Image 1 (tube, rainbow, N blue to C red):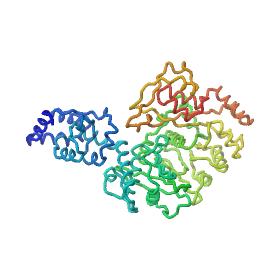
Image 2: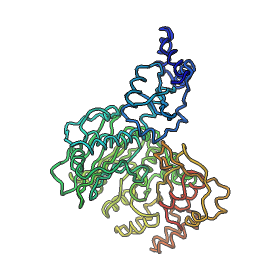
Image 3: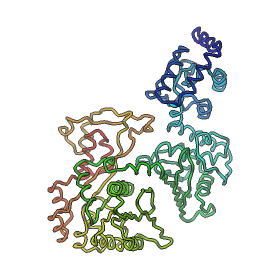
Image 4: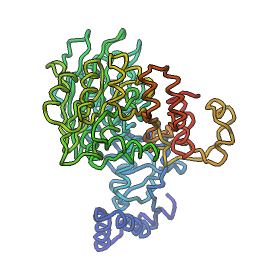
Length: 559
């Protein structure tokens, strides 16, 4: 031990009771405000001639972080900072707790040096995705070492403390898998069975990412059985698909999960959809079309169409492209106490205040078509149909729009022009479709560059050529990419934004539809009328620094 460290320790041990009481005030009074907490930590660090660490600009050494058991960090409330030779430098909130530091030094088997951080910042760092990932990795290690037993009575309260407690390895693994997915903002958890292993993946911002090391195939049955028990499914049935749902409590909220079990040639696969209704519903209370990322001119035109007294507003795109969220945003903007708004969805994923929402139940005979007929007898002003899947629903929706209702709906198609053919192929007469339709909007979601690690880049000549973009087009713009950090899980992306194309049904385009002209002619006419296509909208997001060329090339066709 150096003379400075020895002197510091002597000072710590010889503090008076009065000074200790003052320190207790400093340590325990952190809840008053963030600013006060930072100031208290700085005073504490200065008093003992220790370094204060600003956790906002703190970058963890990932290898060092993974080398320390997660339960130690959670139990003792510290974060590893760096290695100075054999000495491990850690960040703590209370450097006066010498018994804890001595005990931790014995457990880790190395000398410790302390720095000071705020309790809230340390706690936040410990609950970030990397720490959750560490918990998950350790659960996987337990899985490979122990014989698993099934505990069907598993608790429904999910916390970090529970994940590090002494529970059955199978429960620990599944709970850790779910907890980490929530921390990393995943929308789905995929459990895929291969020949020799079980792979777990998260869908984050629309892209699948490996969640953990592969699990040995011998534990596949135990993992699937645990998921089935949680969803109240038949654990003995392994030959047919099964669907279920369950709920888990987390600190401050309850989260819903939908489970789909599917048999494959290597065994059963599972997909768990995460529905954080409470947090999303809170967002939707403040939801408007402004936050979805649409260009201003398209947004103003779309607002004009959703304010019409009747007609059909059609949003199209593939699964997971944000169609329903856009319609929710539109409904949130136009709802009022003077109008009756009814939605029929499969399922009702998010609850909106002041709107009647009806879930589809095909087992009981409540289909889109049957539900829509009932809705029309319920005296609505505005209707939202979750999806048009069949000719019957299409006909009823068109009739509703023609009889004085404003109808919002979605349909699966690649672009706005393909929608026209889709409806005509479902048996809808062209003149009815033209008369009912206000506008068609096609949209996609692209990942946005992480703001914490974004950096300017200069695309190479080959990248520009592959993207069909000229050097002159980007010369006055700054292009950004994410380097990868803890906040974005090393991907360089965090969150998504929408790109869109909006088709105005001008008189010329209506006549072309009635004449059943080729879609290529209709598309050309729309372009001449000023419509911005998906690809152009995506390029604008790149030029604004919100996304990357690689991302838009994945989502849109290079023209």
